[in-house]
Length: 305
Image (tube, rainbow, N blue to C red; front, side, top):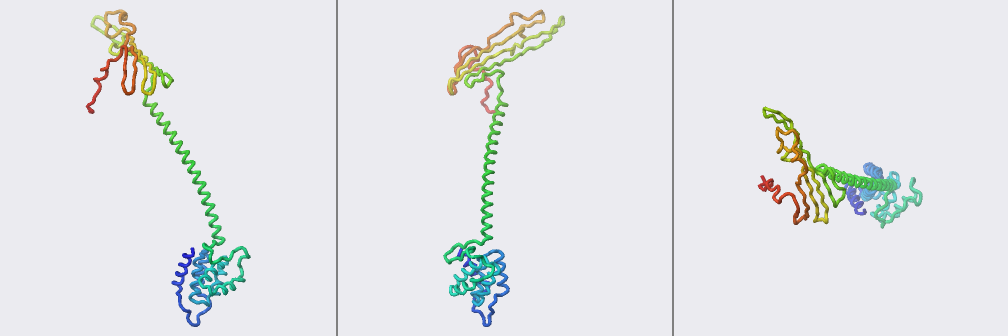
């Protein structure tokens, strides 16, 4: 702080010059110096007022009283601080400055403005500046509260976004994975029931007679399947598959001469009746009537084309 106003002093001295006052020099400060002092007072610029005062007095010591009076009239709240800095720069004028300030009109009542000592650094702010600092502190406090509120809102918004993402993921999984018509609600035990109905209507005409037939497709007949599975642990599960086909008047047996459905071709036929033990790493062991080990291998394509 002290280095700052000493630099201002050097700047002011370089502006106004530091020379021995010429003969017949006046004891009134110049209009330019007075204007600069009043402008610095209007800005509450203590450093510049001190620099201007010291520069003017260094240029002409006879201006001491005029400078102190101008400061006292323009910025009475700063006169003690400026006087202290002038006394520090010119110790020989300290008593004279104290006498000049002993009864200045418009000064504060005793106790309102403490007389500073040379050891005080940094110097206290004037009342107006102190009020500005207080206002800035209040504004900073309000901004901190606003920031904390915004941070809390951002946290809640992040939680809401994460929850929406979970719901989207669950909805997408539900949409892409078809559910069995009937399924157990247990996590470790599942039972699904599936099947198909594949009936058709046929019309035959051999030139002598014509007939409509209602038949079951022999290539992929109507069938019903039960699939059950129970998890033993994370790797091992046990289950069973029971699947039957229900053929009535199969397309492989109907003839144009028949009057009724072929009785020999009606009823249940076993398709799969097996139990299995499945391991995530070792594979599946099946016992009973089911698909052969080669089932589906003709559909495997390892060419990558």
